[in-house]
Image (tube, rainbow, N blue to C red; front, side, top):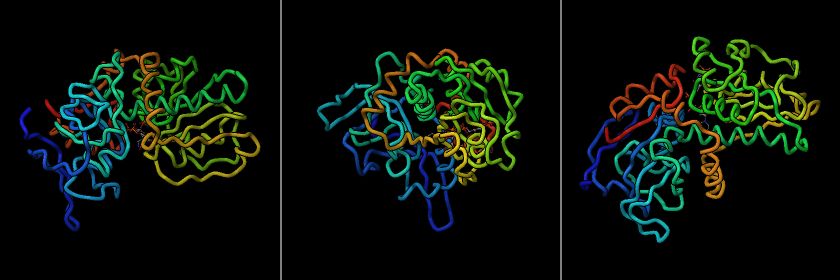
Length: 333
Ligand SMILES: NC(=O)c1ccc[n+]([C@@H]2O[C@H](COP(=O)([O-])OP(=O)(O)OC[C@H]3O[C@@H](n4cnc5c(N)ncnc54)[C@H](OP(=O)(O)O)[C@@H]3O)[C@@H](O)[C@H]2O)c1
């Protein structure tokens, strides 16, 4: 590849915020010891927030967004990574305070990169991306109830924001783990999509939007909540004794209006999920579990692939909750 490359560049000057596709050269990168040729990136909810206005996460402009990518090492000053090595990166504040994946090239710190497992293609690694990685973290949090209760099987699980990237893959992974998955969605017309991913039942989101009771009938051994707000408050009240609620999202709000009752009467556990700042060891563990728990054929059938230009048109739809499943970004298309 020539020294020049194409990337989305965000800029802010006073109240003016801009996003443009620009041709840059490597002097753009001020930090990092490994240069990567990017194959794919993904569109995650956080990316959409950053593309909108930087979301107070971006500290310096001009900035290349994109919180995840897969690709090949081109140049490396680190002995553990050689040119040609295939790598993946999710989180680690790449695309926020470091240049990200909406680019044909990126330079990053070597310690943030994970070597791509050989049995996953570069494309599949980003079909999964941050969303899939987070879904797996959530699913393992729910499964932990089996260890806490000395082997008592998790049976009934609920996933909110189920047609989203995290939600849809959580439905898939939890059903692969053998659980009965109920999906909560604002898009009831997408029930067929959710059932194909493994949901046994589909419930309309509006049933979870009211003011939460102190305690409701306990229905769920585990919950993956990607939405926050009143939906999270309501599912906590419907969780069974010693049930685990893995909370990862805020698409529906950041406030949590709850009481101590589910926690002290039922021993409900609220398990916060952060996929951004987790250790390399845990990242490698999550990637190692992918082949067993992810049906890439099904995911591939349901992705939307966009180039950088198309990405700039589609991200506002994600902020309105109008996208479905995963959106894969090909910066070379
Ligand atoms: N903690 C972490 O490390 C981590 C990592 C990745 C993502 N996340 C968070 O997880 C959430 C999902 O991310 P994603 O990339 O999967 O986004 P996404 O594809 O946009 O999915 C979000 C889903 O939530 C539902 N939703 C959207 N707006 C809503 C609203 N106003 N009220 C209620 N439900 C709404 C929609 O599903 P339905 O139409 O099916 O209801 C939507 O598809 C985001 O909040 C994101 O920030 C956190």
